[in-house]
Image (tube, rainbow, N blue to C red; front, side):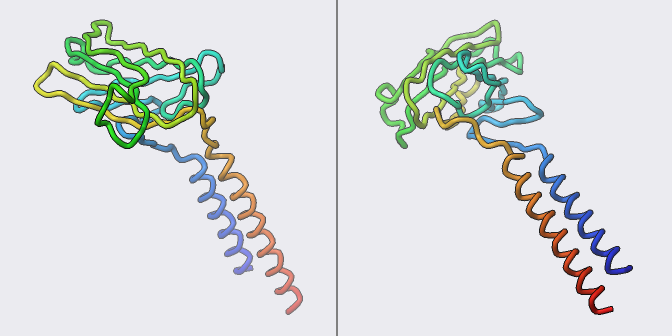
Length: 192
């Protein structure tokens, strides 16, 4: 009975571990972008902006980092802190070439520095092809200039959900534990 109780405990703790891994909240970071409390936050020096991206034609949900498909893309940057309202903000999207020596040559989208008293910046751009890009958001006008640099890809589809990877692994693990316990029980009953 003691061995059976130990086996049941092992199965219980394995299932508990797999379940906790499956439902753990994940913080992802892409340069200055991070997922925090179900909200995409862009950090620019001491300032923070709420980042929301979507593609109107795909009718997909919002995205925080990588852009799933090519085509029309809309990104909204909403100031979280009031201190940003009188400062100038510049937004630039460049091709990720590994060098930012000649920004004009690799820029695919540019909003010149300006003040956004509404505390919201709308970026609309159509990506005609897949690729790697870098977003640059620069805040000027305070004691210092701050730049947030975040790499992203376009057209690589949606990332595989965490559950789609973990569920089969958990199933195989549970099946393995079950078969192991079953063979142990058969061996114990054969020996008796």
